[in-house]
Every structure is written in structure tokens, then in C-alpha cells.
Image (cartoon, rainbow, N blue to C red; front, side, top):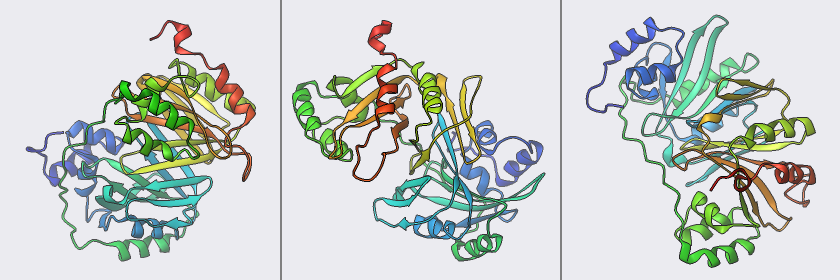
Length: 353
């Protein structure tokens, strides 16, 4: 995105009018601007700038009834129908804890936000949209037909920002941290890994050893990690669907991790995309952008937590999948899930590195 020479808000609105059916993200790319700049250009024409802090946005969302929450990265889109509830604020991390949709929110990365009222063939579609400092979408909340429209209007009034300029300043995107391993500390990594009692201990353990997630996965070895073939993903989704195993699918943007818990029913490939198309959940995954897949086992007090995790060519995390625990105080994994993971093709047996 060029940061020095940008189309004016008038130019952006004219481009939108000339391409009414093009998705905002695609039009922004075509104009070499961020999506936030595209949205901001329409302030006063169905768009209102809001205060971006999640304490306001999330609490307003809790009043909207049934919504569709969308969180995406470059390779995967998660769309969950449900309700915002049980919002828990936090300075460094906030949460929405409410199945089938949980959120982990990082407030410092919520830089700009807008209420958008967009005319469609089925009437006005209302949403709250949040963006990071680069103008990339962090999280979007779409009002459903059944929702309380008056609550949306109240939210717009209460969260309205004093600045209603149609221009949006952006900064360059942060680059993805490449895989980082410390070969000299592998034995310390293995010892620390074996001693974990909670999956959340992984980050601090790896950080102290000067490693990150993918770097640690590459060097720790069995029985903790196993490299899978990239084509194992589609087979995994079909096996989970056929076995009706409830799973937790983690998809994260720069400022929000969206977790959907439940079974999946309808799988539909389309070109490079693998799509889950269920009434309350859609997932759109670009299989051609998956560069590495790992089966990961982390010890917990309730037994091993087994996940399948996918990364892009830069080392960015695309998604994580865990089974939904069978019940409180029961093991974090399920025998059916473990069986599926055990049968996924190993990269080493396919002639990979």
C-alpha cells in the first residue's frame, strides 16, 4: 500500500460507486489503500466513526441480539453466528466467553472503528467494524435481521467519535516474525515442555529460550510435535465431520482471536478454498497458502491437549484446531480426535524434510 500518494475520499467514493458489487477488501487492494481508508471515505454516507476501544464496542455488541462475528487473516476467514455475552475487560487482553463463539481481544491493537449501514438487495446491512493501525480489519460484527436495530442506533450514538473526518491515517504493517529456534536450548525446551500443566505456559517457556511457536515446533521433536503433509488438512476436516466430533477452531487477526466450538456438517471445496458452510458457522480456508502443518501435543493437568496447526510460508499461524473437551475436569483431548490425528499422513513418510 502506498502511504505517500493516496486517492482522495471523493476518488474512493467514485471508485466504490463504479464497482458496487466488489468486496470492500478487494476494492481497497485495487486502489492500493487499506480497507479502513475505504470505509472512512464514506463517513457521512452510511458510515460513522466510533471510539475503537473494545470495552465500548464489545459491550454494545452484547445488546445486539444474534449477530455474525467475522475474524480473518490472509488465509482463513471465520464467520460465527451467535451472541456476544460474558465480556471480560482487560488492559492487555480482553475476552468474550460464550459458546459457540469465544474471543480473545488485544485492546492496544484496536485503532479505528466504524458503524457501517450498507444498502443491499435485502435492505440495510448494519455492522460494527474494527481495524488495526495498518487499516486491516481486526474484527467485524454484523447485525442479523432478528437483532434489535434500536440497540444498534443507540450504540452508534454512544460510541460516536468526535472526529468524523473521511480520512484515515495508517502505518505500515508489522512483518510476520519468522520461525525462531535455539538449537543449543533444545534439551531445555523438551524438559520445559514435558513439565507443562497448562497450554498457556507454552509462550513464556518458549520466549525464555529465545524461540517462537513455529521454531519450537520444528526442533522439539517427538512425542511433542509431528510434521504433517499439507494435504492432510482436507482429510482431517472430512474425518471430523464424519465422526461428528465437536472441535474448537481458532482463527486470529492482528488484534482478535475468534474461537468457534461445535461440530461441522457441510464441507464444500471451491478452487483453492475449502469451505465449511453450516447455518451458524462458515469457514473459508485457502489451502494453497498452507506451507506447514503440525500435530502438537502439550501436557495439561487434565491430560494431553492435542492440536493440529497450520502456518503460511512466512511462518504466520493460520489456524489451530483442538477437540472440545468431553466435560469439566475430563481430559483435554478425545480418543476419537486422537485417532484421527494419529492417522494423518506424516511429512517424513512422504519424502519431506
